[in-house]
Length: 180
Image (tube, rainbow, N blue to C red; front, side, top):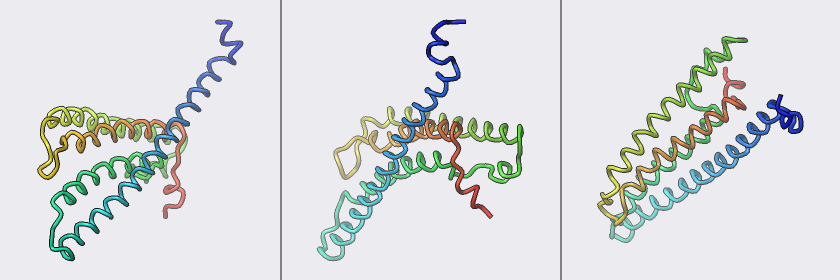
């Protein structure tokens, strides 16, 4: 045996330390994503209010707010999905998870995790491709690259993968516990 493992507490302690660090990273990322999603929702609401005010009160419709709201909505959803994945709040095979016990429950959890990771991997892969394809295009009403809007897909998918792994390591299924 390696003498370093005796001094450090062995592979089990190292694994627990890595898990703890990963979950701490996830907690920070999930909190940041949820905060940003809430800020974006407030910003989208303010932009919508400005759009209505400028059109119907000032009779000078804003030319950029609708497009900005659509792009910010994409970011808000992708960041909100990260928090939902971490909580286990997205659609999964809840009935199978509730009814399964023992080894079957363990297998169902692994299948759900792997399917989520596979789906997010596809979004990540094609999201990166989409961002590279549209990087030279600009919005119709703003001189801003379309890549900024579409970057929400690979960024959200990558952060979602972290959340899925963290949920697998430390499940938080509040909706399963209170489901009827």
